[in-house]
Length: 163
Image (cartoon, rainbow, N blue to C red; front, side, top):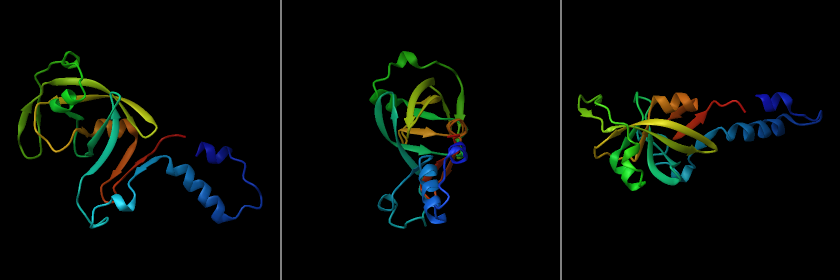
């Protein structure tokens, strides 16, 4: 909004042209998938929203965004693949419980550097020694820090950043 408020708009610009300019400005605040990356069913699916992010200077695929999770989760296997020194894990004795009722003791927690789109994040992750279908799980702590609005229906994350 700051850019739009401060932008010089010529008097003779058409509404359509102005709308195209505004859409380009707002487009940088989204991470979206192209139509050819959507599942075969298009937007009529119930699949999870996965991102590809830079974590600790490596590209990490299968990063799930889960607005139902109250923690960010990093499987121990992901840290091993990233060659992150286990000494960085702060040991604790917390048990994480999922919606299905399973409980799992944490290995500990770790601070990781992430780059998602043009933005860098320093986030705390709970480290679990479990086999899962994702490499990282971004839960509510990341969603709130990023001011993100995830939509699995549209396979998109919109960011509400001040430009």
